[in-house]
Amino acid sequence: ISIPVPDGRFSVGDEVVVDTDALNLRDSPRRAGRVVAVLWTGSNATILDGPVFADRSAWYQVSASGLTGWVVEAFLSLNDAVTTPVSRLEPGTVIEVTTDAVNLRRSAALSGQVITVLYIGETGTVTGGAIQQDGYTWVQASFGSNTGWIATSFIGRTSGAPGYNGAVRVGSDVLVTSDDLNIRSAASLSGRVLWRASHGDVLSVTDGPVQADGYTWFYVEGTLLSGWTVDTWLEPATSSSLLIGALIRILANELSMRAGPSADDLVVRLLPIGAIMEVLDGPVASGGYDWYKISSSRLGTGWTTATWLALA
Image (tube, rainbow, N blue to C red; front, side, top):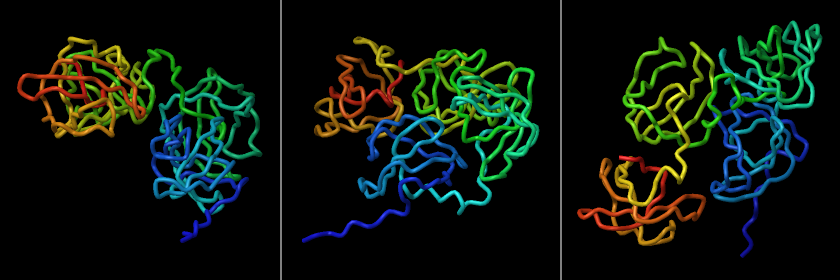
């Protein structure tokens, strides 16, 4: 029996815009594909290939902000179908030029007087916006001594902000290196403290960087709560953080512990949040994750991913 494959909504060469808060750009057309970047609401992209149907979704290869990857069709619209996209580049966001050369203008329009020409890799800070004009979303930004308007199609968030430690990136997991790290409601020292992360907690970075009050801020998510914090007391939660013999704490309730280092292996136990266990072996790379063999006298021995483990 032949099952008909549905047609996609877009064609190669179509100009599209992201119409969800955040859209993962992946290196392959499947949900298991590695996330190479996050595209924010209002980001412009060009269709390069597709559709490819996988994981119950239609996928398109797109070019956006100087990067190429695959995204799910459901979160795209034709550029002329979206009249008021909202930029996620809030004031204070650190940006960099992602094209060979782009004009910084006195007004948010192609007819605006050119203040200066910016070149790939130059960094600045968003000071205002966003405005939709001439088919582009514009933000006001400061580059050195010059402040003007720039189209968001030619910029992206940067990981090279002044004062930034260079280690924290959107889409990565980080380890808290301070006791009682404040997680705030806004990227500012005046933001309300929502909760405090403990030394050894593993958090997921989902937004940033934003420069404010002399710090670089990132939006992080814990097991139950989320908010803004400074990068000063964060470091990558790499496999080197978990050494054989180290004691670790489970960060998720009912975390699957398996008979082997693979999602295909049998689940031998569901681990409770807060349990303390010892690392016996690892890391073993499988299915896009680092797996560790862990053990305790009460809960037994098995394998789980590093995602929900933190140093105790």
